[in-house]
Image (cartoon, rainbow, N blue to C red; front, side, top):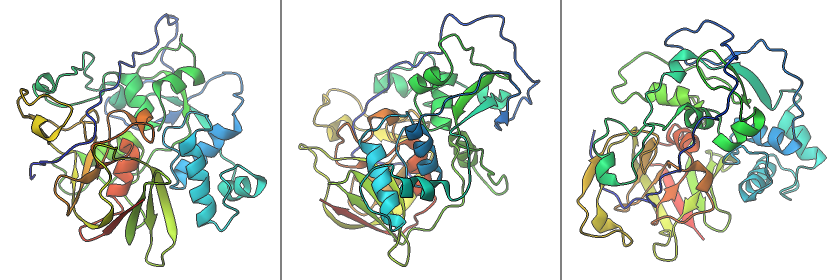
Length: 354
């Protein structure tokens, strides 16, 4: 794979999302687990019914329909409102950013699905590998064989498009997290990922661990809208078919307004970290090559543009999307970036506008 020499967005590393402490040691796994399984089966439990907040249910449905609210957290933030507006536009509804009756009916599409599931954590998912003492310094990161998750809680949060804090709220600080144990999560379903063909970068496993189906709608063009803070996907008929919240540019490194083209997609890429390309990093630091992983500065994917050093990519800090600044490029959550990667191809127009 070609090395990526880019001007990356902010090199921000998330704080440690440790598994809950003070857990009841009497809890036992509910099923015997297949050592390689990544499938989340329904848990058989006598847990009390869960009262599902309407916003949480709407976020799950929006995510499943391709109008991402960013992290699913049950909060009425700007990414949630933008997702509602995008969905309303796509469905020909009044675009008001509110969960009104017409929008709720359109989201449900005649089906009822719970906002959360009680699942059994599969052994293959629980075994990692993890990097508990994830270093902040790029030189130390360069010594790692992969830039993986810090722990199982962080991996579960990305798999179900949420945050470790939300998982604790859905369960309890005393809930044990491990293979074979029951756990409540947002209802982001398993996906069927092809296992045939060459996959030297492990992309099939990445899609499965992120709950992203390999088959997605084809993008005729994408539009990065600075005013709305989103990346929009359009089909051949100029219809809006998907939308994702994005972090894009800053006062120091503004979004490059204009019409560009996608040159290629690097899945699970190596990352060439060059301090000379950062205005806020000392030039005394050495350039290093970082291995792939979800906690890479560019996340799990780099979508290259025909403007040098600029692209669309994932992040190690999904909760910052739409709230932080970047060094000019477009940053998405890892699960949204992976989905966009399956929609675009070389030559797809990428329009950046204010």
